[in-house]
Amino acid sequence: MSKTAVAVGPTTELAYERNPRNWSTVRRWYIAMVIWNLVAPIDMCSTLYSGAQSQVQDRFGVSHFVVTLGVGLVNFGFAIGPLIGAPLSELYGRQPVYIGTAVSFTLFSLGSAVSQSISALLITRFFSGFLGAAVFSNFGGSLSDMFTPDERGPLVALFALVLQGAPTIGPVPGSFMGQYVGWRWIMGLTALWSAFITIPVLFLPETEVGAIKRKILRQANGRKWWQFGDGQNEKGKSGKDVWGKALLTPLMMLFWEPIVAATSLYHAFIYGLLFILLEAYPYVFRNTYNFSLSSTGLVFISPWIGNVVGVLLYFGYFKPSYTKKQHALHELNDTILSSNPSSLIQKDLKPEARLPGMLVSAVLVPVGLFWFALTCSHPSIHWMVPTLSGIPVGAGMTLLQLSLSNYYIDLYPTLSASALAANVFVRNMLATWFPTFSVPMYEKLGMQNAGLVLAGISLAGIPGGWVLWKFGGRLRSMSGRAAQDSAYMVHGDGFYAEKNSQQISAVPSSSGNSTIIASSGGMKEFVTTQDLQEKNDLAVDHCQHDEHLQAPLGDFEDPNTTRAGLGLGARKDVES
Image 1 (cartoon, rainbow, N blue to C red):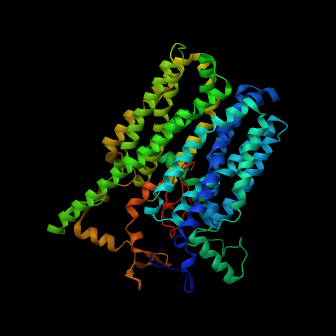
Image 2 (cartoon, one colour):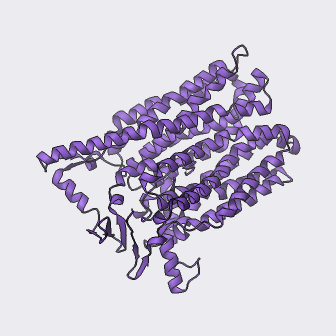
Image 3 (cartoon, one colour):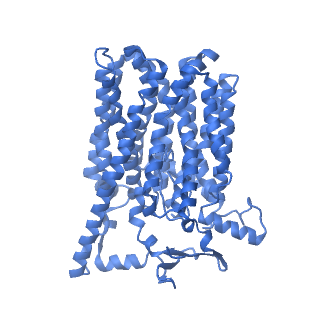
């Protein structure tokens, strides 16, 4: 790797060894794994609680509705927490956000374990989700701070798996502990796990290049860490501007972009199925097969295997397939332009090229739900048959999340992070309430009918996905914010002019492998020429998760750009 440097202002220069991408591979992977282990207990805490519900209900004498709020309020915290964590990261860097997240999540998890009333338990559960969720809006940016897109592939797959897999597998240890130990130990497990990982988190270095630059400037000017010049970030935006865009733009996207609204609602339902099944699986397998609490938890291994299958399908087939089509298009353009340099060409694949994974998921989820509905209420059918239905459901959940996140990124080139944040907000808001009505629905409708209702609703993804695939260009033309077909078509001479004008200037550095870029803001940065060619490959790294991408799966951009980290990381819209 050639040495690079980033110039800060007229005199301050970021030394080669201060650039996170230039750190040793061992150090970068260590930092990534620390963050991964911080994500895991936070992401799992919502469903780990399921094993404690019956004990909590007996201990405090509350209704089933109230006790399930212990799951829902964590999801509510997940819905709004990333909206707060992203601006904090942009203004102060990732390091203080990680430290604040780890410490506060540990303390509130401990508070849940020692709660003496149901009110205290629910309040501490909410704050553990709310304050812990900031990690979801930052880890994607941390990965792109330290790794190039070519290096990030295995890490993106690992984080995609933990985002979807941790809450799916949570009921397994939760149910075993719920059967054999007291409910406080279940809450305590989360606290102990996060406390253990908080120790290395306290010593994590700052990886965000903008924050490193600001630290150098503060040290040069004698300011403290909380003093940031005139209250602006390095792009000249005030804290008020940063907060306003982070909080208001996602809501604007929900109200004014029908594609975002419709796909977010559908995704919210598919994501919420996990929390419906969180209550439905114990109810069904206890009544049909007389399963114990610990045995019902083992059923969740099936959708977890589905999550693994979904990750393998996406990174093993759909991502390579997209990359192959993109390369084929570029080779075709080279052939066309070699014979006629002014020919009209399509410079990139259109957003709809991201939809095949979503179309497959729209089939997998209904198949799994119909399978479960038609077999779960018959004791004569072996218990393994309804159990295995979770595999296509889990695979479909993961495929949908990865495909839809990348679709948003291509669909809204300057507002992708806000679209992702809107999606995360909607799906976690719905997941707040889904656990509360699951068992009452199964009791009133019956196991088979309740399952058929869920399967029927999930079928909406098939015609919806087909409409996006077939009429995507027409739908995009009705939006003033979405990418238009005309933007993908360009004459050869215009194509080269556009490539040359993407930056004000680009001249080779003395190393021969790096380029100095003069940005519109006047700040000069040295980046590798490879980074300039990676723009069209970045979307595959948005595996928000996701949750939470929870806010979780977002833009993994070059670390030398401003990023608030909504959705899993980068904010392309902060420049708009």
